Image (cartoon, rainbow, N blue to C red; front, side, top):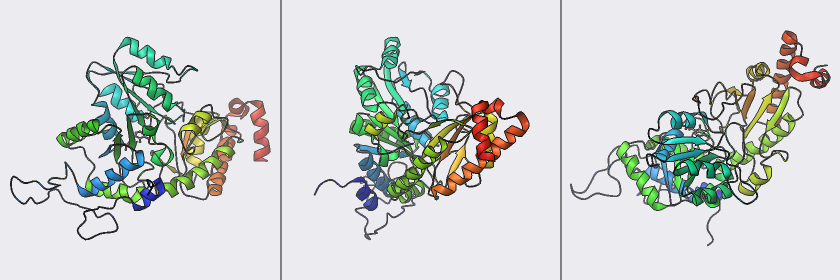
Length: 411
Ligand SMILES: *Cc1c(COP(=O)(O)O)cnc(C)c1O
């Protein structure tokens, strides 16, 4: 039989093969210890900090989804990223993309002693050279390149195949934060990356009821090193949380397909709205990374960001929606809306990549009817523009051409 495709893996995923009762749904082994036959004889499991059957079932599924030798789960996405950073020897450099989740920047710039962290332009020229990375490699020993594609929150695209080759040329590993895509849409290990990390809190678990992180590696030796350290430090995902992620992940495919279809529709609609200066969605043909993204992913994903005509308008739109929860995080069943400047990226320390502008709005599309979401954003935009017009006169915010389009909408 040929290898199962992702949908089949997910539907069947998480079975515990040696379960003595043949449970058809993955059982929750909510136990700290496992009895041993003798003091000097260990069974497959002895202590849940080290290994637990429920967590093991989840990790086996995740390794298959991402096509890695081994997947390890942690108490959060940040714990997973911290574990990856810890593989970098002191005295060497981590090169990051320019746009990165705020918490990752906080961790890297404030809490990694002895490691230099720089942000570089990871774009690749016609000869496949990544000049930003080469320049960093001239100044220090680069051990790790770390990026997101699409990045959070600007949804910029990095050519992962080319950056993997460029990283290997300077003797570095490439780690990709795949949170925004999930393995359903993109498998960076297949593109040449060495490590993929996910905040499973987002789309992988998908129900907003657990925080969890994943590291999946191509090389089994690196997997063993990470597992040994995780056991020593005790940062593994708890069994109940592993069970929740497993339960959520089994519907990953249908959730992502449904939500990204709506996200595409919403992004297209947003492009024509007064008060919206720019829409960032890698599934749009006019997105600068669209061709690269199409060659390395299976869809634009569930996140759409847009730049409102002003920070004030952005705030009014966020407050004015009724079918979007104002909340950090994304990839859940219900739609959410946020201002990355004030929320997910508030922790970006000085010296890191530039913080997103306050006029940027990030939307995560859920399983709602897309027409309801569009109608709601439409009323929030119209209401926000009317408020702004009352306090300033809209032409200050939109320019005269925008004002004319707005008059059509409001009247
Ligand atoms: C949320 C997020 C993280 C951090 O994950 P937690 O589970 O919140 O610790 C890392 N990377 C990206 C891209 C994220 O969106």
